[in-house]
Length: 432
Image 1 (spheres, rainbow, N blue to C red):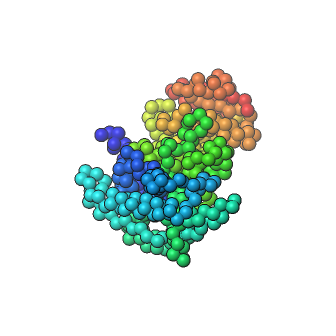
Image 2: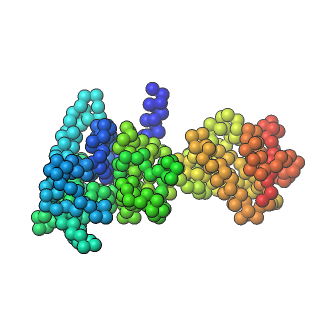
Image 3: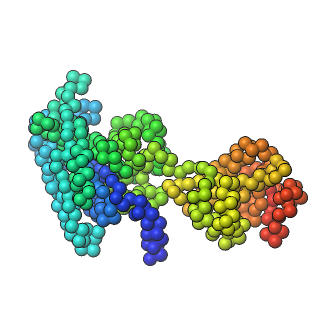
């Protein structure tokens, strides 16, 4: 019960932040055949119930492949794009149509003891996507394979205003009445850009983007993606990554890659600070910056537990407000996870490193070292020659980073006179 209460408390800022925001969610055809599909649908409904404006884009590749195989037709591709001739288009229409109806039926269910109980959702789909043919590439005619020409932004917006979930299929229509087979990633990306969506959420088989050692890459900027695309080569993970980058370059604030195989991956990514997939964003998810008066509340939340344990000297709100200019902080998605302060000593070339604190959940991530390096750079810029620290619990940490044992007598007179002998802090100094 306690874990649930804590989770809800930590999730509440995100619940508030996501309300009335527009999310485009893309689920490939493989996701509909995975055992976790039902949980994903429940999570989509939960997002809707929390006030999120949802556009759901579905894929259909394995369903199309199954119909081609049943009719004895051989799939044809060029540059990883399906060549859609007349017979293949029949299979595409059959697969997409049946899948669309199945999704609408699933979203219409009223399941007891689930997020869908009493939901009474309205799902709207239609000719929201205008398409054009890809044409002839490298001498190959792609026939009925197309690309998105336009998204009916106003039409979709009206449906979202009416609290409907908009369902987009990987089919598009031309002004001359033709039907084109589209890539669901193209539909999702263009929809997110044209609608000015707050988020694009892309489901894939993997947890997110994995590095060459199999570790999850938590965050990327669009300009960092090219080497990963080169490393991945031609695979679906690269397609998702490229779609996320295109969306961000087109104005979508954040794109997320999560796993359709992992139960709760969508909710973990959206309602926890560290998420569970890969975030692609133009914004800096975590940054080190100088503190401002608006950060006082967050600083109090960070340092108060350490003050109560006697690790840090207690500072009142008034003191923090007065001295806020001395602080540097590490901010992670709106939460202050680490801080440190630099106090130059008057009439000397010494400076005090004080109030170095890291949220217990974010230790072992090098943030303390990052702050120390930043404070040292600030001190050098101010012309300081020596940095000192008073500590009762973390002597070894500072010793390992070049601080040498010192004494009160070594401190400048202006600071030595303020030394609290009752705390009996150890003094360490480091030449800059």
